[in-house]
Image (cartoon, rainbow, N blue to C red; front, top):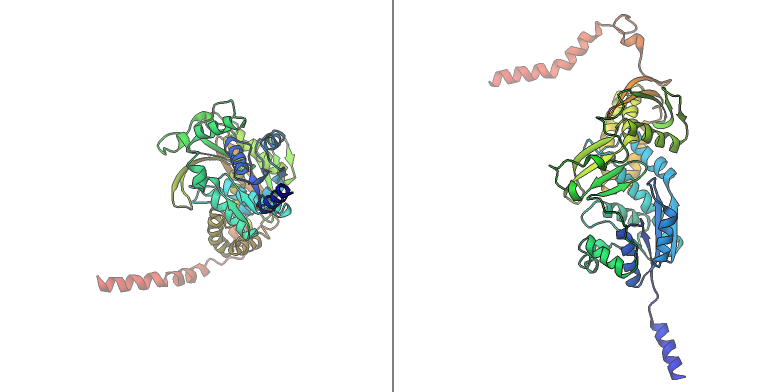
Length: 423
């Protein structure tokens, strides 16, 4: 009786196991993290997000369960990633430091939002990710976590000394995997890291860390080498409504897509064939480090060119000036992880309003790495052929330009006079 009472007392005193939802990829890092979290006393729910990457999700689910995951969620987020994150970026022409189209930056808040939904559904106290302690992704994940669920607790192993002092490199992870019966890929690891989604593939680290070293030619997966891409151009017709692409048609073979995913995936394919969308850059991370990244963003590159072109004939000049100021702000908000901030929500609403009349069709020529708008038309066009023609007077009075020029020159003339007196 005494022994039973002692056992009951010990059982009552034992702390309940807390639950963590882990953003899981099925790779070596997050598989080791999954097992390590279990060893730390957590019940682990593995969560895989399908955002358009090539992945065997059934195999990843089976692997997580075999490693001890309590549950596994595989969520298809492709549609919401495209319509709720990528399309607003296209509407705003969002671009970071003049070159990066923000493919990874846009994916993280989408992934993290669903992770929080699962944590709340499962009453998990913790969420976890495999982002490193030097990168931007840890910030993007965690700002989303705290914005959507202020009371959530975060386990970031690569910032935990108990983890990163134990696992100082891939060999340590491989050895831990061997000891814990975690399957290790039999193929040799590429000497760089890669992150893929519907919008792009990014490559960094390893041999790419030296900015003076050229990226390996065989590395690229979404795009053909522009040098060896077809000489014959492809011309695609892209239709926009309120700044969002709603249809694409190949004017060569007549192939047409009208769904959001259909439009985007087809543009990825056809632009990739023609070598469109590669960049190799050094960027400034939010944490203060410079990093070298190589990106393939075929559909995003084509849509940016087409969207800028349709805006040119449908958007008022002064509205565009204000829109451009907001675009730079929005791009920084995306890059730095502030998607779910109040200021970003405000900027998105303003940018959406700027797109109300951005509709029409643009023809884009794709050839050997370039995407060039070559024709456009719109029922909302502000372009007046009669007014702009050099052959037709229209409603424009040329003599009015004289007064306009004098008023515009007033400041310059006064500046010249004053300057002459002081020299």
